[in-house]
Image (cartoon, rainbow, N blue to C red):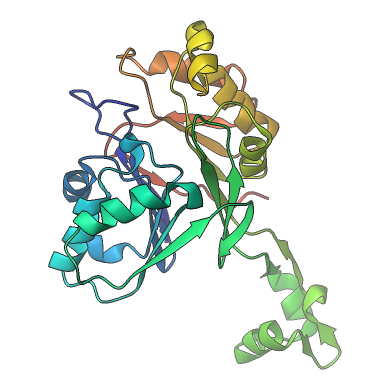
Length: 294
């Protein structure tokens, strides 16, 4: 099962309708919590996200609206008796802040700290790319391995049925029949997470080929000067990011409190996103992972 649960969509300060950041990605057996801002523990209750489902916590950077909810989430996991290992990924330069936040949590969790400082893989199927913000920040990419999709007419013509199909998949060959003779390449699904950043190469890399892309949309196009000043994206820039990378769907979030109606931002993103579907996020939304393309 793959699903994105939106726990909060506010940048800098919460509003009456938007909590600080928080995003939970169900990815088969993994549960990844991204950027738990203040109030994330309570939002998880409203969204029906059990703390026991979290296997990894990923911080893009250590500004408070992206990490001040960490002690509460960790303490809740201890209270709920979570016994499995939990992995915490974060920029190495934010180590002092992360360790201070962890020290505030109730002890007893099997927590493993994983700082990173360069682009590349950080765990099986998870990679990071540097972003361009006022402090060191990284975005995340979650990838499914490529595979093969069997074509039933070709299997039937080859006389392969039942358990032999699984055997062929495992071994790559069954007698004279090769796996590639009866199947086609299936690209793995890709999830991209781009938070506080100005336009940069790392953001484009994370958007490239993403089936589902989460991107900050802090400012409207009319406030581009503010976006430049604070190193954030405008809605139009977020849309262009997704469109240039051929992303299937774009989830906009991290909205400034100056905007009550985010449909304005969604419209601006759609103007630059090309064929990408644009979804303005609301707190507690549940967004199914898009169907496999092609």
